[in-house]
Structures are given as C-alpha cells and as structure tokens.
Length: 351
Image (cartoon, rainbow, N blue to C red):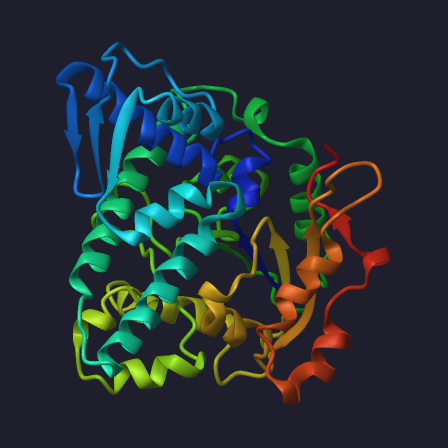
C-alpha cells in the first residue's frame, strides 16, 4: 500500500529549527532595531520606527516582552503601516503559520464588507502580505539545516522520527505498490536528511508549497479554504486583487498539485494509500487540498503522530478535531473509521 507522509512545521521544530512564528517575528523586529540603531529611522513598508525621547542603542530583543518593555520605556516610537502587521505583532503569543494566513483572510473579508458599504482599500493588505512573505524567506534561509560536504547526516536526524520512517518503510505488503511520497508543506528541506534510509526509487518529496530560494518552485504563502462561505462572494466581485493570495493560483505555477493526485491514484481505485501526519497543524488554510487527500476514495487510513506536550498531556484529540474540519458532513462516518485511535497512535518525538 502506498504511503503519503505529510510534513509540517512540527517536523522542523523536532529538529531544533527555530521556525515558530514567534522566532520569525522576533528576528524581523531585531533586524529593524539594528537598522534603527544605525540610522535613527527605519521604514520597510510594514512599520516605521523612530528613536525615542532618550536616544541610545537599543539592546537585542530576546522575547516579545523585551520589545514591549522597550516601547513602554519610550526607547523608540513605532507606527504600524497596516492593521495586518499590527495584528500579527500584538497577537504574537497566539499565532502560528496557519494563523498568519488566516489573519490575512479575515482582513480580506473585512475589505469585502467595506465594498458592500461603498469603501475600497485592498492594495495595502496585499502589499503588507508580500513584504511578510519576502521577510519570511530571508529568515528561513538563516535557520534551515545546511549540510557540509561529507558531513554525517545521521547526527542531524531525530531518532524517534527515524524509527517512525523505518517502520513506514518496512510495514508493507510486498504484493501491493509500496511507493512513499513525502508531501512537504515546509519551505525547508529537512526531510532530505532521511533520504539515505530509503531505496532511490522509493523516496520522493513533493514541495507542495514551494522551496526556499528555488525559482522553478516558488513558495506559496496564502489561503486555501475555497469552501468558506465568503469565497464565492469574493470571486463574484470580479476584482483579481482579492484573489491574489489564494493558494489555487500559486499551485498553477508548478506541476506539484497534479503530481500529488497522480500519486493518490486519481481514477485508479487500485492505488490505495495511508496518510501519516507528522507535524502538520491541519489548519483551514489548506482545507481544499487536505479534503482532497482525506476524502479520496483510495485513502484507507490516517495516522496521527501527535505532539507530547508533557508527561500528562498531548494534542491527539485536538489534532483529530482539526482533521475533522476537512471532512464534509456526509463523510464523517468514513472519518471515524479511517483515523487511527489513540492507542494505535504515537508521539512524533518522545521529548
């Protein structure tokens, strides 16, 4: 049986990469402060910074608390150029990557409502989102794993994940197809560390949302819930600015989407597959794509590798709830049968 291994940000976190939203935004604010310390003024289209009443060098922020403390002490003045960046910075503790995209969509709906009231102002939101996307690529390029020539790859592997992947490889029925596809929602290439564990014809990675610094596979950062009730209304506006950051149009720039559904066996009921979810949030930002995977007639099983928060708590039930949102009402029965129960599930890592 074929195996589809879905890779999300939790996979990178398990390898020690600082890829949380909080890591990115603190890097962004510190980069701005470095410039401010030099020029006494900073403006990148997202925020404007001015030195405060008592100009002096501002120390490196170790947390969002440091940033807010320095602001309260009037070490600098900040002017948010758009509600989008204002919301992202001030909701820092509550957001992850999916929620950045969701925050964009919430504001998009607000602008749709403004049009109904005779107002219009979408360009500023799209410009802000584009700057965030550029800054994100720059940041991730500084933290992704880079292998030196002849470096021992084994040392960078996570042992728990290595064991999971070996079981996925070995637990097969030799009389059935046994292709493995890693559907990588990350822009980083951490999954490539495990390439040597598999036969050459068995290991394939689909960078469905693009790959860092790869012009032929540009990153896709946007929203993908076209089932949402407002999406059709937005399409009916006949204004392409409102559709600019929907993932559907990013997918059209490569063959990744089509290649995925070829693997899933579109039109071929003999190509059954299992889904293994490793570190993906299963948020609504990828709703149409995940719905196509989970409700596909060839999908036989969904296995959750949950996050073990501490000795007594994990996110298995939460993850199951997130997955359930990608099933339509008439498919909930199938959902209950194909998602592995908790006793049959494993934590992604033990620590």
